[in-house]
Length: 575
Ligand SMILES: [Zn+2]
Image 1 (cartoon, rainbow, N blue to C red):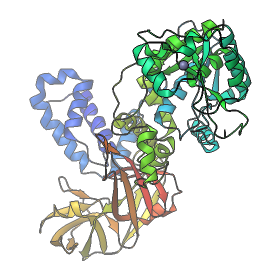
Image 2: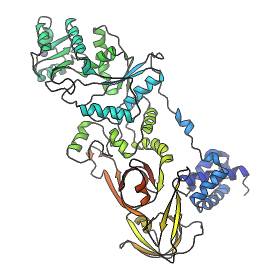
Image 3: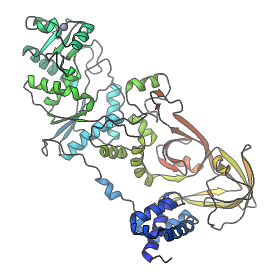
Image 4: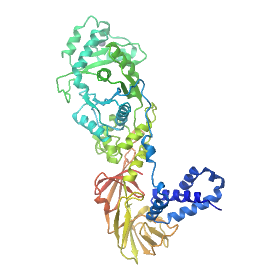
């Protein structure tokens, strides 16, 4: 059938582009669907067009990737460009209620009780994006009012994490800086009759709370005001007394049943030492601090939903300004929990390497695995501030990351489970490889004598008499393959580009290093630790890999993107 010039060009350009995207082999089904996407009318004579597409795909696949790249550059340069321009403002958060330009203040309030993870990244990015959107301010406030859990190490880790995410807060402070103010407002609440000292034991408190009945301390609180001085003066010890909000003991919202505002913790605080023992809870500290810090929009995760009434009630009782409170769903990936309760035992029992283990959802772990902060930001913004409880798959983040690292990663050869191939009747040869199929990243030379290694999975498909092409090198005919002994003999045939012969990846015996790739898999299956969460892939890589600096990203053809760990190993990022 006759195909017009436009369609012919579209076919060629699409196939070339696809071939380059897939290491030299365009995929027929992808090409067809792309063509139909750009020219739906082709559907009407699909029967005639498909053989034509097939012909072009075969013809282009028989070319070397360098030639494909050359043709695309010469004839269809606009197909080299990806759609970066569109991505820039791809995702926009919805506007904030009652927000005025130049006056918005948001805050990211982590407790310094662990290493920052993907959930922290989400909160911090949303807080920062809103501050930027309204030319406002972002406060980083360490909510450090529980000396049982907090360590200097964690303050630092959170600062490092934000730095990596390119988040620069306008103000950095600690809730503990304001401990005297918080005590002052605690006294105020008691003086106004909105809070009281409770001396009951924990069981009694729990029991009466579940029944919705007040304890005697509340009933008599007006008469025994001297207890208030005692608690502020250090008379009581841990578990002997707490300060409770006078809420509503029979409220349907259990968060309003006289929650704890202050408790005594006799542990050394990382910043204040042993000076203070009466510490406010998050329920008390958060609204007071937000109000005092000038926060206009307090964004927090949905698990605090029930506590919003309390947040507002505390401020109202003290006649303080009440910020807008906005909720979003917390972020964690399926099979990759962020809770310390689940992760800490893995570290203590040495099931993982530490907080920077590439299997973990910590920022250190994600960084080590090869995720970029740009990808995390785009991913977070793509989720928006919905309240949906579904856990996204990490593959969604991978797709964002791939778009970013693809143009920065050199393509290298790696064969796992290597099978030795002796080549007969061949001259020594030096081949030049492009470091990237479509972007100028220089070239490298590989010297081949008469032995190469191919991966076992490729070797298993070979049969005697079969002709194959060693990628970018030349064609060979299989004489003998012994998978168990991991060796084979082949013979050089020629170096003519032929259609329809399989192309195989190889590593030259003259130019190889033993190389290990660590591949993280899901950390948890259901509720239990996945004992196969780290796969070790051993093989040979071309020695060029040892010239690359640690932390650089590469794409081992066929395997996927990896982050170089040192000159012997890399961590698998994703396909
Ligand atoms: Zn009581």
